[in-house]
Image (cartoon, rainbow, N blue to C red):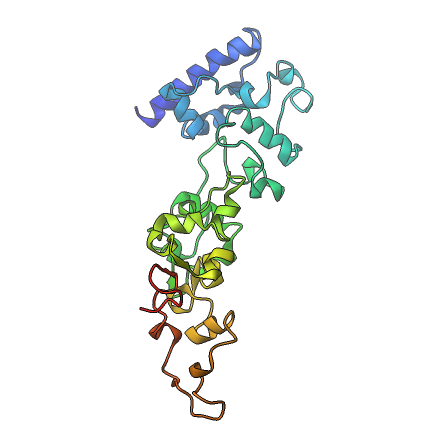
Length: 286
């Protein structure tokens, strides 16, 4: 179906719903808001209405019946315009239809954001202006950029998840509507990391304590880092020493006054190779 024909069909559907909601004598919304209806045709709500997957997408479904609105268009008592509504009030209206995917407060709603902070209901939103290196990100990630620019800078490092190349999306790890995802992103559960890195997640007979307490972020920066493997420290030994400050004497020499056993080119993972966990050795040796 062409875009023009879809828009015309949408207007006809909405007029039918409006006539039922407002009565034949009422002035339909298109009399004043024809441009809004035209743009609405390309939105997910508009397409669902045209395709038959949405049965109640009239203006009244979100804005209220508004029977008296045409006679007093500036009176907020006659129509829900959302301009002065709190985020809680806005989200409650959206949740009346989207309760399956919005079952509780999320990190965003707890921060005072409403659904309209990220979603555009009446028109297809324009992709946010992004640095040229992020031109291949998907639309969802582009929406995240407007608030999380400091996170996007981490993807610019030489080591990181390949968001800029379009290989992953913010939604690959994050769900903006999930109230409980924080526990699955970090800490010992690290479920989100496990989805792609199952070989590092175990279970192991001998588990690395850091991963069972602080999770992957004990050693890695999840979005990107200037250090190899997205580590928090450039020097491998310096990273290990953040937790393992007390090491056996033979690591530094066979006697307190003796020569160092290991040189500057030696790193912990020369011997402790299975650092994510092992089924053979509690010290993560080969």
